[in-house]
Length: 227
View (cartoon, helix red, strand yellow):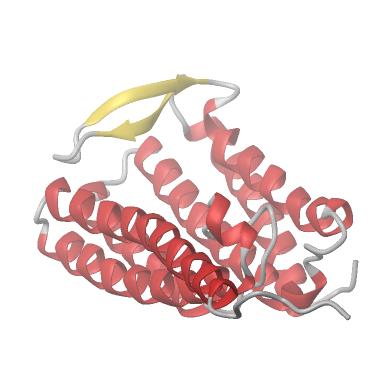
């Protein structure tokens, strides 16, 4: 695996998350708050020793994907064609989880954290960043909008991801603003649902349209002549 700035950043975030948890470990309670409801009230805890390290371990697993997935991707779906975008996606996701880990630890040591505002705002920013690069993903089995119809057609894949990228950006803006305003979970659920469902439906409709056009083109050729 080549060493890029995104690789270095991703590894640095993983290491920093473990260091942060280890440094604050003695100040944390025996049960760490790990889930908040829509009103920002803690409704779930994870006991030590796993509680402080749940997200760091998840981040380590995601970083391993950076190493493994490009090597096991089958022929015809190689990830090297969008390696830089893939690295950006993972680094952005790890940055989001690093922030969540920091907030979780701060809440654990007694710091007042407005999770009902910060988490949606951070999620919205994540959607915007991912949406901006979604159109650069090429066909593969691991990253992107992987429906039977996008995987069956390069054109359907490309056009679906262009639409999906725009919808992710718009959804991210809605989620970000609703988080800052404390608008609650409903705008978030609606925005995420639209951004996820419409591209799936679009990929099916577009695939049927393209395949139907090919069928009509073949039928219009008329009978073949054999010499």
